[in-house]
Image (tube, rainbow, N blue to C red; front, side, top):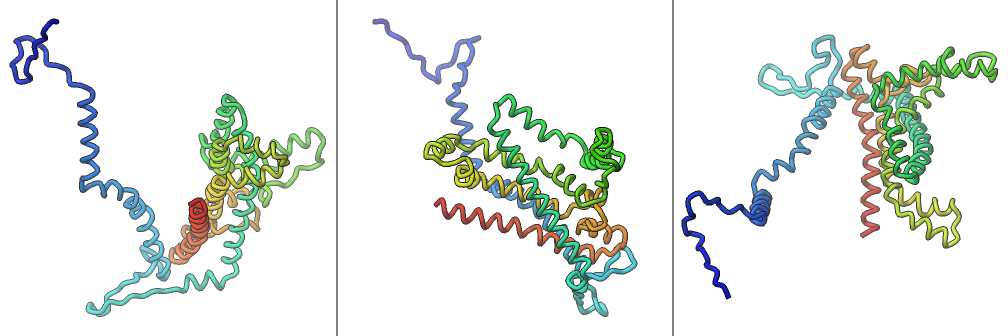
Length: 333
């Protein structure tokens, strides 16, 4: 048997010899130790607090400022509202809170109708988006992978162009001498152009077209992950397709349904571009009114009060979603 000599680690190496390469295990150990030390560092809380800092700077502070303006009084000055906190005779602090703007919103039928009209339009648009979006999302989720990618590309394709350009495109389609009326006149289906522009019909069409992708994508994400064997088991037990949909597919897809409805309903309530460009005289929404109060009437306190009440309407669906999620977690646990 041959004897192998062992060179100690502290023995000096011969001149010109290369140092042994560091082993990957040692590198992994160093990386692991670095991550462990990272978890114990004091600035870990700062990293976690970055999202909260973002919300504080870009949401909470602007909201507090808008709330402050809503409790002021409109004046002809710069800025066009009174100060809430003033010094009287240089020694006494005076706080002036004015709730007249909120009382006006409750007493004036014009604002109440605008709020109700906004909720109605947003609800109907969300309902149509849900029906159409569910069918499209289900078809995409059950299609072949090659076709699925093309269909998803078609869904997100409108986002590649400006929102305003898409609305103007629909104005060209729905106009009295637009493409739709010209085609219907050419084939003899109608004798005179249909009045589609500046109506509730045109407004709902553009609303559904604009917000439909926001409904399809979360629904597709939920339906695509659904186990197809559950449908097969339901069919093997003799359930009809409608029964399978109501008892299996729809309950399992509720997270996508709720997420899609929130993504459509919340921005639709405050929309003002669509009703302004294609809506009729009876399509006054709170978003348009908010714009007019700020920039046309220069009544910033009243406009801020309108915005605060609108935000309350938008927070309610989110709170209902949180309540539903908490109930679902309790049921699962």
